[in-house]
Image (tube, rainbow, N blue to C red; front, top):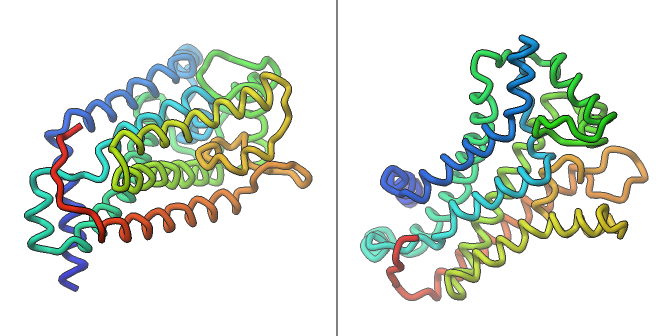
Length: 294
């Protein structure tokens, strides 16, 4: 019981440091700015037509390739200081033990990824202000614009374009699409944080960030090769875990050669569990070291 409390204290201590950490504040500020900018078109249409926006915009934003990659790059920025060695580290290890400290850091990555994902969803609602209205349905405005995107290719609203918007409307309920997107975004951010934690433990701190960024941009290059260059190999998306929070990459019909939702959730969960176990093991051999704040 004491160990569990100490793990929670170590995790909570990291969150307390957010108040004085400019990098964390900039991360959330940039996320809010990007989401505000991405919804300019949709917000203008809502104001002009005096139509309400339902709280299910996030799956469409995440299915926009540019926004999808930007939000994951911000997650890399949020956790780039892993493995979180600072001046408190030697004292906490002396008091609680290295194993407790490591478990607290792993819990912090999970929790931090959840807070970041919740903030993204919250920002995607707050940007609409008084034009936000709760409904269990997609709503007239989202359905109209999504159908227009399917017909025209792009509506200039920052939402998913082309057939992706219609795909989301046709095969998911609002709760299913939003819940699945948020779950896969959370697991994807946790994957990035733990990947950087492990690699920075074993190598130079920059290695983790470089590999994490490579996973983020992998989705872009796969999209270019698969669609932009006519190189049709959707099987490659099975090996790009950050692609899966974009519902355009998820199988919805029998015969589609893309990852189904269950595969995305199970594999991402397996990856974060594996990275957690490897990180805890790596901490056993790590020397006490204080690293400068990023």
